[in-house]
Image (cartoon, rainbow, N blue to C red; front, side, top):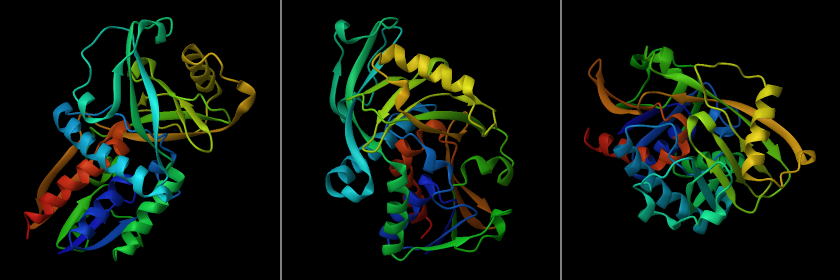
Length: 311
């Protein structure tokens, strides 16, 4: 079956790979390719964040965790590494539903919890170095026979193919007239210092993280909904550093080497569903918020299943 994937971020490329593996003819059309996509500036660690519905997201996330863990073990060029991290919370809550599906999950001892927090857990999760991962994904798709074409899509009805897979992220606001899609602005700082483990406060109002990569550590963050600003703001840098230092007092500000801004495609919940447009199936896969990487393979497998139902 001829499948056209619109969008070349992590969701689009993951869908392309799964469809190619299933034997379909696949072309990816996008106005932007790596390194110029939003996905390229993702932090990025596996962790469900700013996404719903929770039950479907947990399933997609667990599938993605397994695939990323496999890549970390079997595909070193993919840029996926397994790293330990700790999540800190300001209230005692039930452990996440996915706790039994990931590696090295345990509840923290009170002595391991920073001041201002009362609860938390440790876990091992994939850290994805997007400057390596995005080219690797494209190379994987190309090795399977996938084709790529640079073009701006204004109308899904005019896209060629038997099935269209819509992975345009924030672009769905205009392409699909979906005003539920809004940017969740994320600003990060790059640091030439390794914290050893990741430190996280994933609550939107106090979002804080240190994500250790092989080349640097990514510090964050912000989640400013409906904010389209792409400039690095000094006041946001100050806030990020203040929040991170509360979790990691050994941070050395003299080791700062840069920063970036990206606009996450937030939505009240992920839109993953099939729609008939002019007698042809269009599968929408967008609105992943801050969990695009975290849900990518699970969503791609569901997209492939929906395509299979069309044959």
